Length: 306
Image (cartoon, rainbow, N blue to C red; front, side, top):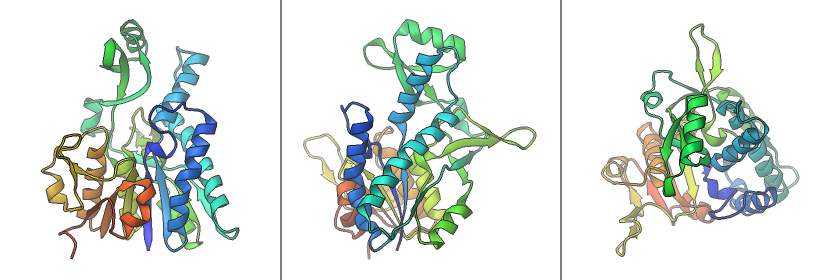
């Protein structure tokens, strides 16, 4: 079975942990146990988040020269290489010596006319005081959003992915029996300029939507969206919360889910199924095999399980 596995940010950094190399490596070692288990009898393609790491590199760049921030497409490429290396290294340590793996930087094309560019709403990077935010917004033309206690953060557009550039290279590696790590952080955002050349974009693409596009493009049998929550809940956080074992895309549309966490995963799973995908699962990383086998998490089907 061909399975696209999308790792949430908790694969590298759990809530409240310091963002050090040692912490991230420890968490990756734990994450790859689930990946290695799947890889023993399935063909897997691994995507991953990169939000905290982009923020860290943005801080490093600001410390070097606050007046010249690094472009988001370059930061995305740097984090893809860093995270991909960590996953590849530990995954190969966990698998037999004859296993093969390749990490690819993935450019993902977006539409310059996507409505998201008129409504930047994805918080990224460091937290600023109100005065600092006003200064950097003036200097760089950034949009800012209020956080808690009067702080501010930069917000950028989050356009939909149109095309994964290099999909043929991924297919060639899969044909050569390689595990492929790609589409990190939703991919490196690029678009065609007025003269038809590709250029980087100051945007962040949703990792789960790109993973759904990847799964569809590879004709994957399943899409797993793994995080630190057991699945989609009704009345999440309430006294009567309960997990939804299975659901259809049309039923997902009726739910009110958090935009910053479960909402994008549910939308991505529904998009994959609506495009003809067979099966999507959402749940905890440690339950990866049980989710794939239909015994844990939230399973998304076209018309419900047979």
